[in-house]
Length: 157
Image (cartoon, rainbow, N blue to C red; front, side):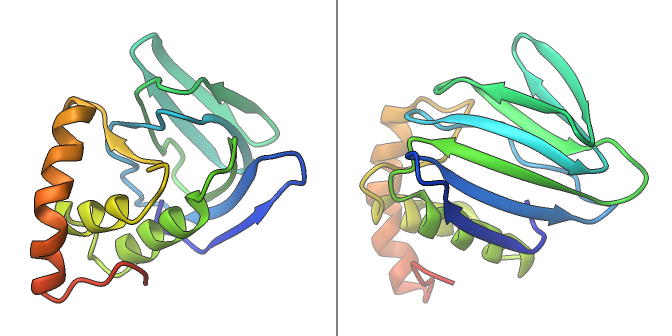
């Protein structure tokens, strides 16, 4: 997601992320949230949600739930931009991570080094690439985070 992002807590243990995206948004990489389910509510436009179970097209006024640990990808399906509201439950400390990830993507800085650094600072990392085993990512992130700091990457943007 690379639009304007705002985060808030819904009062019942969920983190609510409101995100807008442009018409040329190519979407998220295949990823998963190992500890959190994701409720995606489309406020404007049409998004495509892909999981191993299939493809779901979700339009304005509709929603879709992705259980914790399910690999998925979200991308724009319309000719125009759109807006979604994503609720991650439970919330953990995902606000800092997801806002940082969105800000990095908006400024062209969403590299593996950046994600490694941000994941290492989180008590419950909210984002893992779907096609790489989590144990391997944790090891790589542990090795790459100090390298990212040496190269001038920041943990928060």
